[in-house]
Image (tube, rainbow, N blue to C red; front, top):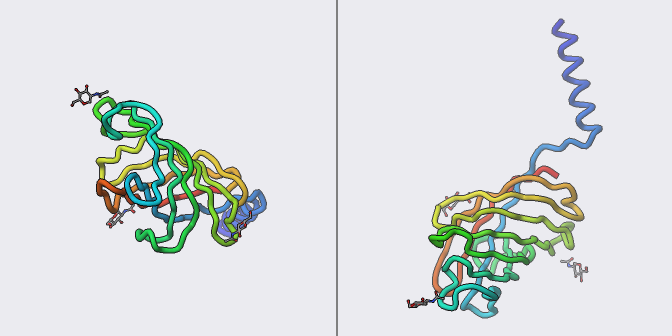
Amino acid sequence: MEVLQAAVLGLSIFLLAQWGYAAPSRMQFYMHDNFNLSPRTVLRVAGSANSTAAFGAVMVIDDLLTEGPSPASQPVGRAQGTYMISALDGSSLLLTFTAVFSRGSENGSTISFHGADRFLLAEREIAVIGGTGKFRMARGFAVLNTTSNTNRATIVGFDVTLQV
Ligand SMILES: *[C@@H]1O[C@H](CO)[C@@H](O)[C@H](O)[C@H]1NC(C)=O
Ligand SMILES: *[C@@H]1O[C@H](CO)[C@@H](O)[C@H](O)[C@H]1NC(C)=O
Ligand SMILES: *[C@@H]1O[C@H](CO)[C@@H](O)[C@H](O)[C@H]1NC(C)=O
C-alpha cells in the first residue's frame, strides 16, 4: 500500500513537472517616486488643483526600480503607468503600472501590477495581473512597504510572489 502511495505521489510530481507547474518565486525591488527630486518621475495630470493627495488626483509615473532601497543601488527597470487617489478621504490610491525590466535575462520582460494601495498602512498588498517575455502568464501578488517618505520623494519596497 505504501509502495503504491509513493508511486502515485512520484507520478503526480512527474506529471506536474511535465505540465510546467513551477513553485512560486520571489522578487524584491524598490520604487522611487520623485515628485520634487530631479529627475522628476511623477506628473499630476488631473484632479484637485491644490494637492496630489486629494481624491481625484491622477498621476502618471515613470519611476526608477532598483534592487535596494537606495536610489543609487543597482537598477532593475522602470515602473510605467498611473496612480490616482481613489478613496474619498485620500487614504488610498489605485496603482496600475507595468514594471519594464532592464537587467540581465529579464531585459524587455514586464510584469503588470494593479490594486488598491492603502499607503498609510505599513504593509499592503496589490495584485500581479500578468506579464510578458520571461513573465508570460504571471499571476501573484506584491506586498508593499513605504521605506522613505518626504515631500520630495517616496520609496516603496515591493516583495513580489509570482507564479509564472
Ligand atoms: C483648494 O484649497 C482651498 C483652500 O484650502 C479651498 O478653498 C479650495 O476649495 C481647494 N480647491 C480644490 C479644487 O480642492
Ligand atoms: C536591453 O535591451 C536593449 C534592446 O532592447 C539594449 O539596448 C540594452 O542594452 C539591454 N540592456 C541590458 C542591460 O542588457
Ligand atoms: C518593510 O520594512 C521593514 C523595515 O524597513 C522590514 O522590516 C519589513 O520586512 C518590510 N516588509 C516588506 C514586506 O518588505
